[in-house]
Image (cartoon, rainbow, N blue to C red):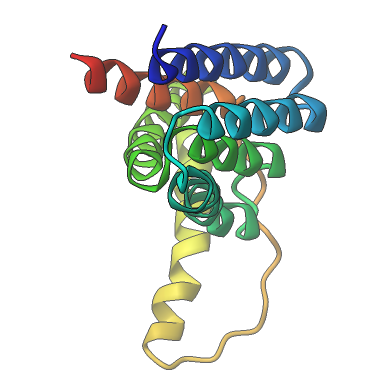
Length: 176
């Protein structure tokens, strides 16, 4: 079995485990992510490319982290989700983790829309979007604003599902 297929299989298993934990416990264990990083490191080193550590593993991890870190800092995502995408990056490298992140954003948006509509919380969701965006627009216009209280959440979601769907979509399309 080629290293790429073995890596994809290991990543798919990691995503399955992370999704199961996120659905059941609403968290992704650090031990699972550490194991994923270790497996990704071993597979990158076994790939036959001597510089894989500095051309794929580390840059992929960094790009995956950077793609989701702003959402975490804004309070829209949990730390486990950010670490999961960074781990995905360690497996697939910097360019593919960008594609995985973009696909994940699409799946995450669809999931959020379904959850908001199913819970009949669309009015509260749009009020939250307004509360988050208005200060940004006002500050861009030079208006100073006093800090406001955070909007009330309309409900969380197991974002590992969106990360899994986005990543697996990119992986399947890569092999098509």
